[in-house]
Length: 543
Ligand code: GAP
Image (cartoon, rainbow, N blue to C red; front, side):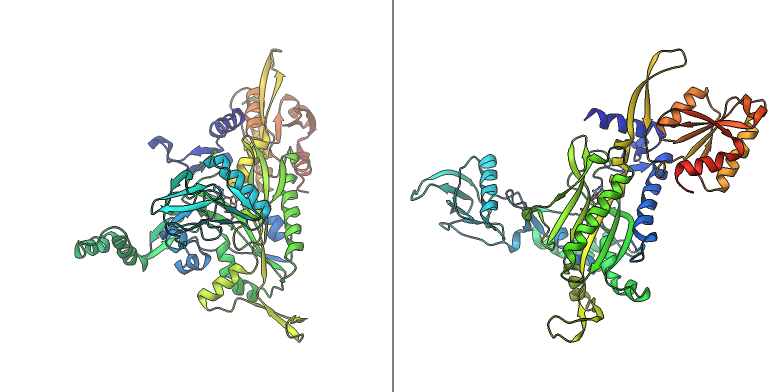
């Protein structure tokens, strides 16, 4: 693992940001607990998102929907088809499809790979050469020379040749969009976590079904079992987005919203990820911050650019190194089938640039799908606009959607990495030592101020506790800390990312002043104790 990543993971545990789940039982793979500092950092991050997306806007409203929704939601959204059907990945185009619905060329049939354009054909040609060692012929946007030999083999044939240069295992079908025979094994993808609603244990029903049907095997047995559990099966949401489509009408009507407007939600999502990786970057339980912004058809490009810039700048605004945040447009072959454009906001992690947030132009796909499956009229009527088809006043349409979808827990990792800083300083004896400091933006910092009596006597703790109580009343997260020598306490709070340490010392009793130490510069100023709250508020930017 990368050195910086190791250091951040180690500090995260030591200082109480993130712990491995159920550690005393040997840990649960890819599950994490947010400790005393982590929970504060995560909440501050999510509250800042809510503030900028909901509280500071007239055109966005928020919801907090159930994690378990009606199972038909996942049918309409397409998530369920990937749940119970065998899926296959095309190794070249990355298209994922149902094996039982794919075209099935037979012995002697040519297998042309038909791309969208020449550029894509060249790209796939290169991938095939790299992965399978054949220089496949290209004719414009078509890759040629592949042919089915028998039920289990296909080959690559030079022009006018009957002898295959090279052969490969054939699965009996090709990918539906491009016709590619370069495929992964069939896999049952359980993307969503399934549970049963109701107190009756479905294992009892399953047992009696199997006892009554002892002859059923393989696919038939699976189908039967699925039927038994279908009526009570529910799923943990794999994204927060769908509730915002499903509650589109209730939200729009209850708040009299006019298009363009957005619905925002943040909270837990669950995915049985095939690979979990890089600490909390990809885990099975995580938190998202998503907003569905409903716009008039035809205006989606303008709004996509608007939200891309807005979201990128938001991430940069809390960062020490804003240059590490970029956006990247999706290539055509990367786009989800329902999207007409998409940007990823990426961060330069220790392993390279990777996704932090997606900003997608999802067309009218989701509202139309939910309208089709539920029978509800998920459309919007604008009395001020002319219907482009009839030319008459008043236009009813299905809004298009721009979706900025961010990971909150992934964002927390990003800001831990951004904050981690080491520098050489001299200790009290004049020796060089490494100071680790988490330069977390003051608005996100878990603890805003530490109040430190220099010694535990001479009335200093009492003065310190009076100051603490003022800060508590003002709603500023403050910690009283009298453990260990003052230098050690400063270092502890450097690692906790506490922006300011206030120290009460002998001089406080003489002239009523205390010191305020800045985490990043270590500079100390003397200020009147009675002005401490005002000074900290100004430095935090909350007044
Ligand atoms: N509604 C669209 C949607 O969910 P996504 O790209 O799958 O899109 C959005 O997810 C964001 O959620 C990602 O950019 C990422 O930050 C976060 N995310 C997705 N899967 C995750 C996982 N397994 N662990 C942590 N964060 C994840």
